[in-house]
Length: 261
Image (cartoon, rainbow, N blue to C red; front, side, top):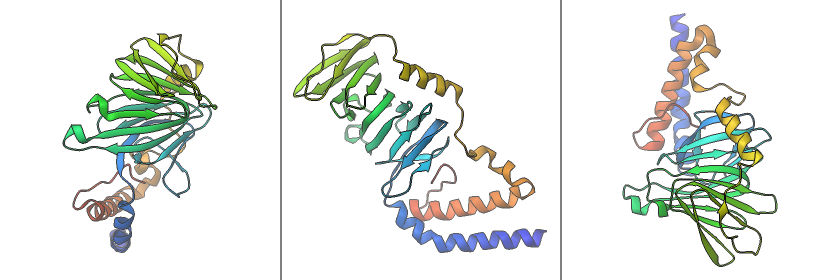
């Protein structure tokens, strides 16, 4: 049995050494910017020309990735600056530009919402570093938490829960304070901010789904060993070896063994 395990591990090491140069080439094309903390039901990510991949809790997300959710589905993403993005059902979000610089003044966080509902809570960067765009609005964030709903026709509703948002459309801008809401539609300036109405059903559903915290189909990293039964130890060792080789090659000496795709 020991000889068999050693041969298996040796084979995996050989395969890892062979694929390492290719892993390095692929790593340069995508930038890890955070990970999915909670995934409920049908949530998929699209990176470049790749086929859509089902997201699971603990999976990395990348710059320029498109995240799509199905009906009764939701996800919460945590970015490297501790920004959180909650995504509701039937949504499409593009993680456009994420620059995390040692000098916070040079950092940028930008995302686009094509449709659906999100709640965005800023992290540790200066507030001017954050920007959200929709088909009918550009949103600058001067506070901490806001909810954004985008209809199929691009109509955008911005509700500020904490802090201040600057909403621009059709050449005009309004300042939206905590507890207030504005709406933009194609070719029209933002409406004057009004007290926020009760949460729309899509936002209420998103909050309920994320509270449940149900994982999408597929195993998380924490359950991997149970899938392999008596082979858990050799397989786990092999996974670590592959992760170390790929991590060192792609990251110039750093290692990563979980959450990658």
